[in-house]
Image 1 (cartoon, one colour):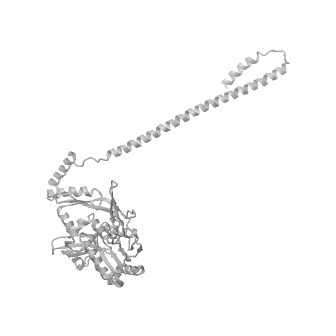
Image 2: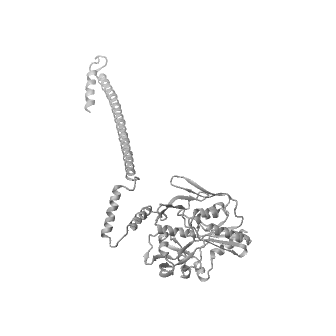
Image 3: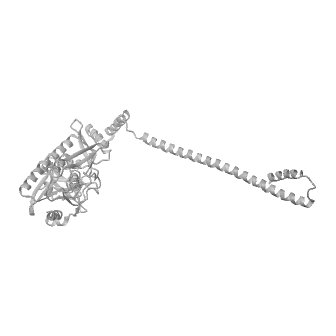
Length: 449
């Protein structure tokens, strides 16, 4: 109001300068009041416009200010985030493992063990423990260090001859404990009554929790005619079974001619000897007039990739068998020339213990559509290991790549679903050895002929 009053006073001074005597006093007074109101309204309008202009200018200024502040805040946040990420990356150390600091620390730990541990420990045991720990730190149950003795056992296994009990062992997917997936005919394991799905809880009183299959097998094997006590979990009950160790010759292929000229070939492992055994089985069954084939891969835990591919080349059409990819994206392909493509009705039997190489063969047959997969979903091991020598009689087995079926399917931890699902009737098998899955496969072959 003060600004308006001051302006009004000035206008009154201007109004007083108008000439007199042109109108009577009343008219002049009325005109004066009217003009005064008009001028006041005009000035108020001007003031309002000015104020509006000022407020708009101030608003724009403040808007620009807040926009600028927000931009600066966002830039600061991005900068802070980038700094945090860079900090995290800088915290990840990919430098050399063996440093003077590490050596000093290891020497200190060794000294503590020598002075304080309640038992004597030789140097080689501690050294092997260091190597075991490095591979164990990967968190991969398939990567491990082999001492000289362990490496020799692995070599014997692939040759199909060893001293043990004659049981096939895998890791149970639910408990991560070792489990018996089958026994070899005429071996101590069969004679002692060991059964598929028996969980091995202890070996000579030592718990198997956290052990690899290699460690479990090493404990079970031993000198000929000695015994090993297995604490088993069978159908919820714990039992102890004493089994004698003997020389075991493990035939990896078993075959026979079933009814209606249906050939049956069971492959228990893919070892060095398996290719020749499978080739012989195919030749004999064809010579006997085979008109259909069942390949039984149930409880086959895998084996050599090269052996698996050699067998696949006696069945598959021309094309990929499998391909692998390492962490660098390098791809390696394994192919078949198709010269021995099977032209008979084919059924492949699988179960939850069919793993690795057996899944490679199963996946290829399924992708090409040359056979029917029956049974239950496979184990789901879609990675490849390689044994690498350390040059001193020891070695490491390490997961080096993923593998993919011909259609590009990666089955690790998912498995392969059968075309026809058939659950195994364990009660019928225990009662009179009735194999309902095999019987279903024989019926399917007849439908396919």
